[in-house]
Image (tube, rainbow, N blue to C red; front, top):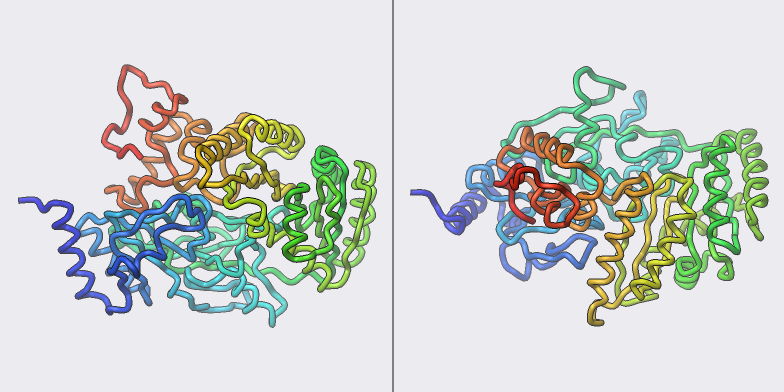
Length: 490
C-alpha cells in the first residue's frame, strides 16, 4: 500500500530528526516564518520544514531522505533573490545553505579561490584584498548575498560590462544531484573536454542540483581608476550616450544610469552629491594603467559633452569614488522612500534600443497610473525599472504585475530577454512564454529531467509549463494536446 503525501512527510521528518543534529532543523511555525520568501516579498509560502546543514555530508543526507520519500527541495542562499526563485513550498523542505560559509583555499599561483556556497560575495574580495586581488562580480546586495545564490541566478553587478557575470568568473563547481550523485564541473584549469556543463549550471536556479563548492577566479586590483558622473537634461540623450561610448571603442568597468526619481531617492538617502535637477545621470568607471585611463577619460568626456551632458564630475580619490557608487548601490532600498511597495523588474535589451524602451516605459506609467524609477546597468542594456505601488490600495498590485509583464515582453520584442541577472523564479514565468517556443521549452524540460527525473528540485520555477503558456495565450496547441501533460500547472 502506497503512503499518502502526508504519511511520506511524517516518515521523512522522523528520518531527518534521526540523521541530523536538532539545531539543523526548523520545524515550529514560528521558526519557519523568516524563510517564507526571498527578496520578492510579494510571493510567500510557509515551508513544511527548514534544514540548515553545517556540512556537505549533512546536505547529502537531507537529499537522500527527501529523495527516498519524494519530498520537494527548494535550495536557498542568503534570501536576497528578487524573482521568487527561493520561495518555499508548503509540501517541501527548504534547504538553507548559509552555514556552509568557509573559504577553503586561496591559491595565489593560479589566482583562484575555493569557497563553500554560503560565503558572502563581498567576503571573497575582502579575503583576497591583502594579496592585491578581488572577485569582480559585485551585485548591489554583495554585502549580504552568497556565491551559491549568485551561481543560481548568474548574478552580475555594476562592473559586469567589462568583467562579466558570474558565469564568466566561476571556473569550477561541485554539486549534488537530487539522487545524491556528486558532479565535479571545471576546476582550476582553463578548459575541460565534453559539454560545458559548468555554464549550464550557471543561472539554473536550483533546478538541477545543490551547489556545495565554488571555485572563482581572482583578478588583480587595477592600478588606476576614475569615476565620472555626467548629468543630462534629457533621458534619451543619456541613453544615446551609452551606445556612443561603446561605439567609440571604450569598454568602461561600469556604466550605470539613473533617472530623476532614482536620483532624488538615492541623494536623500546617502547624500552622494548627485545633481537632483538632472533628468538622468550616467556613472562611468574607467580602470587600468594610468596612460590607458587618461586616454579613455578624455575620449569619454568628448562623447558625453557631445551628447548634451550639462555637467561632468570626475572622482579621482577612493573615498569620493566610493561615495558616488554608494548612491547607485543604495538606490533600490532608497526608492522604498517613494512608495510603500515596488516591483523590481529585470530585463535586458540591445543598447541601441535604450531610449526607445525608456520612452515606452514612460508611456506605460500613464496607462497603468503607476510611477517608475529607473536605475540600471546601462552599459550592457540590463534594465531595472522599479514599479511603485501601494499593496493596500485596491487594484494597484494587479496593475503593477501587469505593467511588469508588459515591460518584460517589450524587452523580448526589441531583441532582448526577460532576465539579465535576477533569474526567472516564479515572477517571470508568463514572460518566458513570450520569449521561448514550444520546442525550446520542451528541450529545457529534457535537460532538467536528465539531472532530476522526478522533478523535485525547486519544482515550478524558472521554466513555465506548456499548459501555462497556452493559457497565457502565447503558445499554439497542436492537435488539441499539450506536450508533457503530466507536468504541474503552476
